[in-house]
Image (cartoon, rainbow, N blue to C red; front, top):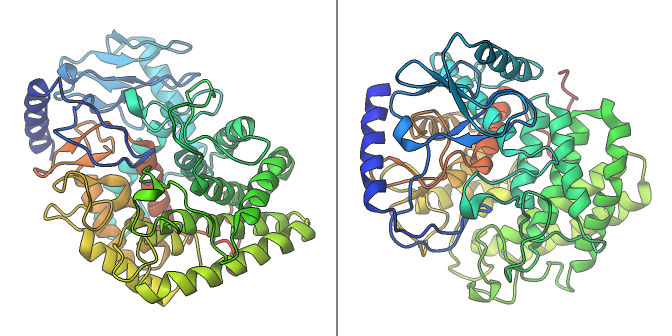
Length: 485
């Protein structure tokens, strides 16, 4: 409904004009802590051009009304009929007439990149919505490409506190790329992570686009190791013919998996660590235990590392890491399950979206986890249909977060709950920007808020749509047939 979207955009623009002094909050390396005031709205999406190095430049709000992307591209037609793009080899956007040959070249290049792989969505029921889903997936993939630098640094978004590469977000970008038949882009992201990994197997909380760590007092976050291991296994599993190229990533996998296995305490759980909430573990309900936001990814990472090693004939490592995963699974069931899988393993513990980290596609199906996921959704859902990051969220309680909606959609899609997944994807499709990009947040009026696109949401939406069309493999489960792509 373009007219409704345009009206919404005009309202957002007026709000933004009144709140230019509002402080941006650090975010979702995804997810940030409590925010105050109204987040500044900055742009409805990125302008690109199809040529290396796939530079993305935000479209200014003043130019956004009635602007649209040319089909399956990052080239924008403005309201006056002119076209904005980043020319091949350039880093800045230019505005040209629509018959300029650079327009057609850029559109064809973007089209060709998408067509080298697959864009999910058309096969998702109901069929009448397939075109909407495919459009959302194509935009998400093109945005992920614009957010990924030539060196493989995959940025959370383009602006300020978002213009950094978080390993957890990067892992999901790699997963989305390989799942849609873009393995070289996936490996580029993983090679970046391999280069910046420490000898001890850790990653900094986030990195600048040039690969240098951000030194801001944030400690390394253990969940990132698990997510990178999961993505590394998925990239190899989905693209076995590239085994030779994946060998270069083995040292990264070994260092991260050994670090996680060695981190397990006597109780079988890893130590407390910051997770995707990016807040001090000492502020949690149980400061002496890891949250589910840490435990879930670590368990998925150990299972993934064991599967990676097993599938590449490294039986000693496979046995060692599988043993650590089994020990940790027992600990999670002992500590979290009796309380319904809350964020912290305490009686009456608060629920949050990290319960999905124990569900497919990260872990085999589990009836207790499925019930806990339904409980979390019920406690986190807002009147606008979106969800908060967690129960009794400390931040703005009227703003929905799209990564959390997309995580529930992915869990539903990968668990066979197609109707629920489609409902969440419909909500995300309705709350995109006027250009069709997925924003980080949606306010109480249903308008996009904060920055767009957000890479983590984009990758999760691609994965959820893909899972609805073809099952995603699960580390530690029975092997699935390798898809022909």
